Image (cartoon, rainbow, N blue to C red; front, side, top):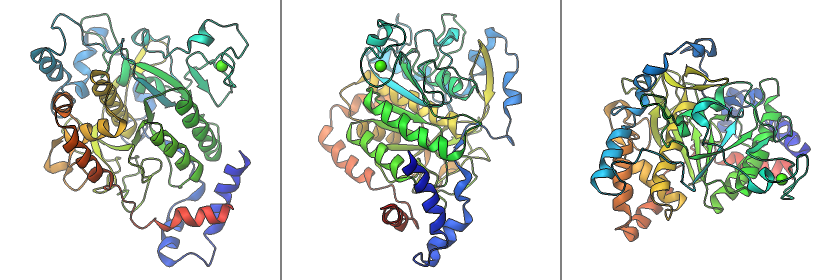
Length: 422
Ligand SMILES: [Ca+2]
């Protein structure tokens, strides 16, 4: 991966190049090139990790999940009531995604699959699970990659030493046997944990591992990639990996970032790549407004979702609150998994269109995100149900929707960087 290193250094060198026009110079010099990748779920100003270990009585866990309730949360009960009314599911059945074939790759800090609310969530590579310890039973180049891979340690022994990835896994897939216990958006949906982030790694290393992690998820059959990180630098390898994900029918849900910026002006990657299989997500709080940290973009961010004061899982059977576009991203990944589980015939772009079409529009989000609204589960399952009856019309709308992502002011950068790295 020296090329990646060269690539980043090459980019830094471009700053002083006379071949850049004034517009690009301005953008490049305003953004620290070597800032590296950041996780998007930790905004110290809103609340730090220190506040996330608060003791929450288990009996009130569900009551604390505002993101699951209706307006401005996802309204999962309304979604379930709609499905029961339409006889899409039996009323006696629990709200559950355990039997879904949809796989969500969480490319993050790892996931603590030992958490009691993630007992049914781990994606399992069967040939490795049944194989011999220490050997690469399925000959994919990774020994003992049972539930995913940790690119920071290069082992299949994935732990979450941070808490961020486990928090996202809880939002997407958490499941409880207790009546009032913690629940995620698509309880029990399978999570492939691919770790790229280590807090003691450089931004360059984290980016290198991101590219490896995306390629791993693509190769191992993920349907959805949840990426709750990012940085200011366009990276061709990352772009190409996500393009391959697009070509393989994978939906990529990416955090808009916590930089308080308009990403139409200051892009945040990978959310800002001009690829139509990416859904980028801003974060709202319980009052329905963007949280102060959240990036936005009237032409660059697709939707908003709950991201302020979000309760979810922490390592070692704990629960805690986190804030940011990371959490909002996980809500959209969970909702995408739910929609896709209900109709596995949908394409990645159709799932994206359904999510974007079924938002609740509000004045708070007008000119902040493309859809002018925040995601809603009841509307999403309704639009998904109706979607099947009008496939032709939907395809036309899809074409239009795919043109909406424009990265203004940065169009010249990719080609410049390609040229530079040749
Ligand atoms: Ca293997």
